Length: 62
Ligand SMILES: [Zn+2]
Ligand SMILES: [Zn+2]
Image 1 (tube, rainbow, N blue to C red):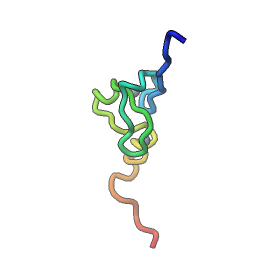
Image 2 (cartoon, rainbow, N blue to C red):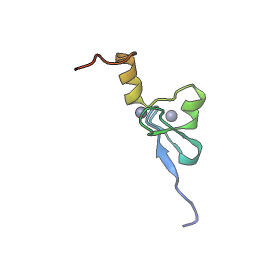
Image 3 (cartoon, rainbow, N blue to C red):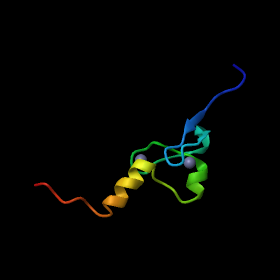
Image 4 (cartoon, protein in one colour):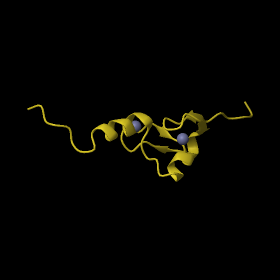
């Protein structure tokens, strides 16, 4: 193979970007592309949605 495919799907914007240039989600470690990182996105869609619903710690169930 002469062309290496190191693309990964960004879990924030859904685009396929180079894995070597991306960053992990600070919450779950899934791939976030460098474009999102430059926009200030450090969380994937799922984690962003979660943190949006629960800005602070969830109520304890103890
Ligand atoms: Zn992205
Ligand atoms: Zn995440």
